[in-house]
Length: 328
Image (cartoon, rainbow, N blue to C red; front, top):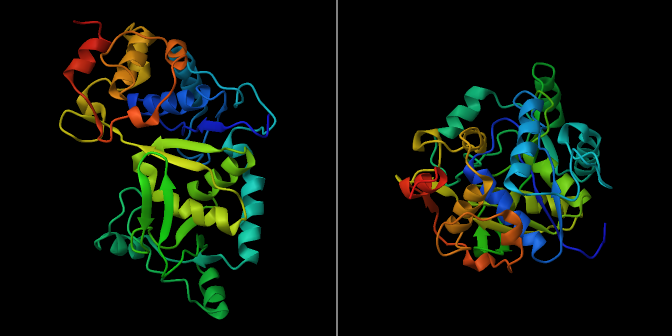
């Protein structure tokens, strides 16, 4: 790998099939790198082994290739930063946790499900991260921790700043600021069942794989303050983030099964050419003026402009479904 080249990635979770929203994110992240001669990595985020399935991981690879998206390194072809499957990278997360413990950036949390449900019923401002954790276990003494540990295996939380806000420049949304009440408070880096949290794993992996650009959906925007704090605590360089609006149904709600066939597998099974899916996604992303069949490789020949992507969520309505089905 060229140390000076830009690197982007797509990192799906194999707990479900790729849907049009996933495919659009993958396409944009791929185009962003291909347009500048950068490298594109694929990583399988299967750290939650209770939900992830190898068969779905393989289907994701097949769906992306069917769409015309390729990658320079990944779980099926290897590369200098292998393995590219999170379940095989646990020692890296353990090492990061040891480093964070040495800095007193972590502490054990003994809160029960009932405690957390009470917190969840309180008003909060986060979209994907849930309610702010009020630090119930943050100030426990060593004796209190020992007493509770004898009765319950704790989760491990990261100490977020209590007073200062977190600011960063998003390549798509511009300047962002999250107050302590918005960034969700102290978050879990390892669950009580010893499954590592998404935030820790993604930071460790993106840094180890030297990712320079992360393009992802706006639903993950409020994860960014947490990840930036982890980068700082681990003395790692943070990538540039760009959060693009999601695809929504005609009712304005996040795209789901109730809006019709949304998975790539469903359209593949119906005999839809991949060029129609690429054309629909390119049109929804402001890259072409009208929906038309288009190969991903053709799209990659044109300069990629992130500012062409609409600022509002893209609506997948009957016009889109008719185009995908080959109707006029």
